[in-house]
Image (cartoon, rainbow, N blue to C red; front, side):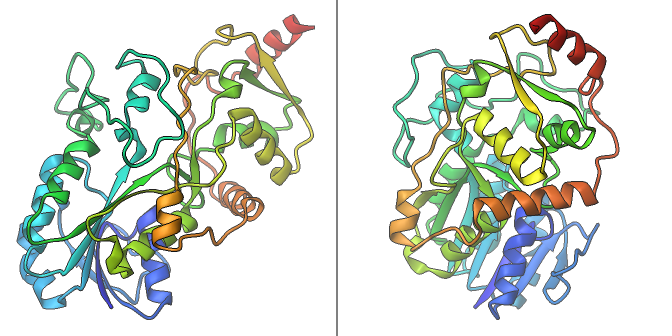
Length: 343
């Protein structure tokens, strides 16, 4: 099968590209051309801007994809341009969304009032009523590197691609994804404490109980690959993620076990930890998703054990240390003072 991937060279997209190539499929990746990572060299590389997909329509047509995957559709125009550029060329499409579309996410951020939603959320659960969750009261300046967040929202992306008349589309709502090449480095703060030989990691006691569905990058890529190759996915929406949503405390303990760290977790009374040592979320709203639909309809199952996924992530973190950290994130003297006051 011929598969076109918009954004197939970084993190999740790279893992999708590798799995498809390993399966003997013809793959074309559309990206800016800044990198050509290991494992993607045998793909056809088409260079361009995701904000101007229409300019590459002739190249897409020459490749003749059976399926097109959009990994990086962040705004409604991205979704609309994708549908327009691939209409009449690809037979089907897969678009990557996020579980931040659900109303529970707005309540987690504190942008939408209300009691905790029924959990786990499934594909029919209520969506956020307030669009553009990261816009804020004051739009970011034109020279702000995060200006794109003013317009980010997966809800309008989903609406436009699912309504495209000539491009049957599947939408995959992803959880928090971790693993090698993750630029968000979800384990970094804990692992640095462990590798620096810290005796304890401080957690807000209320946040320690908070649960959030995660997914290992290769497993998430496998789900995307299944949706791309299986025509039964057309027109369907799927949650992706691990069956079990660990609490924050459970996740840190799992990282500690994989890292070989034998320190303690110090649970600090709720609200007492200063920033940036707290997550700062509305902890009464867990973000737990039901992933039974993709498992039942597309026969999805994880390829990697939890233990192996943590070990691979930690190995990558250690081999690729972060160049800089947030100011105040590793103020060990302050942490020692907090620990001393607990005694």
